[in-house]
Length: 330
Length: 309
Image 1 (cartoon, each protein chain N blue to C red):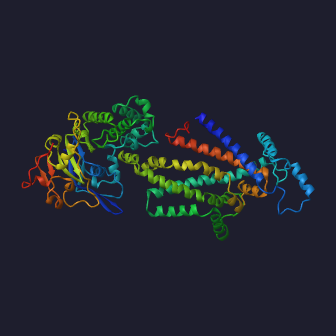
Image 2 (cartoon, chains in turn yellow, cyan; image 1 turned 45 degrees about the horizontal axis):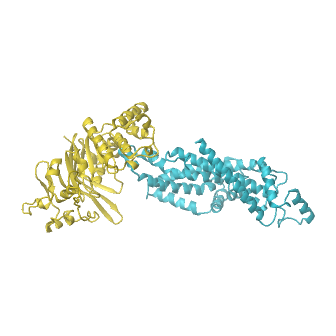
Image 3 (cartoon, each protein chain N blue to C red; image 1 turned 90 degrees about the horizontal axis):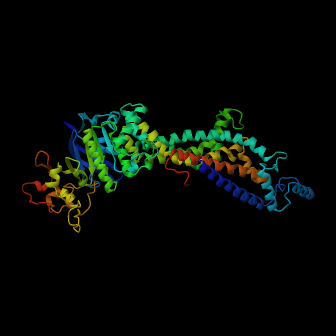
């Protein structure tokens, strides 16, 4: 059964000079206990997609969707109060920057106990006990004394562990991790990913991992969505994306991953150009201006979604039978 | 903490010493003396000389400075030049509590009205309540207190005759002076709260709180407000010191027998001991109020380390 089902999500922001169309018709699903990754560069709409699902966008955002269904319940029809009951209890969220995501004026204990007291109606002693367990679970040394400390007394990696502890406090069915490792240095990144992996296995939680780094999700996610210009340009299992990618943008992302065992002098292949201006998104494929295989049709028409098999789908005009046959250059 | 307080108090003592010195010499540099007033009847020069001699005014200024210190160290602020047989200590002791009562009420009123006003303006940004409170705040900051005092007095005491306009004998007498005193602090606090609240509501930790399912009321009143109040706490020191020590204009207009009016009056009277007494008193008060507001800030914000500053 699908835990989360998003159908035709459109999110836009009204700003002074016009409307930014951040997400344009995104559909996907997440199965129970499944981990998916959403990959794309800054401004591709990946974070906005998940914040739309959570209803955490500012008031000037307009969210339209045919359906946002979580655990059989339609989110678009829920009142703010009903949504709040899901937030932090059934859906946990880990944000990008652990330095700013915790409130500097409250102790870790206070912030950790909050979802427990709100959703599980624990009394202080119970919540405190559970908070202690949670800190142990996210492998923070010396949890008793750490509970009483303030966020500024924690390192970045430790703060992200606290954020994860908050996200999983009420045993959520789904955790959304929005670039959870981007603000951390590489060794800490690996530790945080290990921790998330470990928790996922232990608690059977679905994880939606948002990142711009394909390397980060390789170890975690069974399915990957590649986003660009507010649309999903390719989706498939991790295997399909890493070994049988079809979209030129996915190729670009794959080529820009540094290889540990490769020639150290080999240059990384960048994706040239800049992402499209979402104030005036192109009418055709958003990647067309940067695509080395761009055809005239790409600039005029949005490519249709071509389903290659049950799990692998690509939105690219190159999939058309009459299009030239090109292969990823490695 | 205790070490920090001691350090700050010592720095405060130093400040006061400098303050006393500067004030003393500037005061004596002013032309005229306590006994040379235009409105005074002609005093024979011999009498004047004898009066000055009896107060020690004929000695060199530096000598006077030293002897002032001598009596000051005994806690004696001297006798007023203008109010015969009244010591400056007595004047402060009688009139300061009056100012402090009015000022204290004004501090509470400023906070109780200013913070919620700014809070509402921030939460309902761009709505009618925001516009209204900001119009009020701009008026409060830009219109001088004497204009507001006269307007309020005219309206409530003269036209409507709801409130008394002078004296301080019942709680109704407090309303107008307190309203005038707290007008501009309310405006300032409301503006400050609004802007820091708007900033706080944009922060990542507020988004985290929402993602945890925290109710909107708690998001605002707990997570954002505590962060938004730190600039207000910083402002609290000077505010409390300013209001508790009274206002010349308001006390004059509403005939409040407080200490505020002595500040200006003693200067124009060249009442040397009175000037010094009030300068020292205000100085100590400001030092202590600032210290308290810094300690308060450190209690609210654990990132502020007292020992380092």
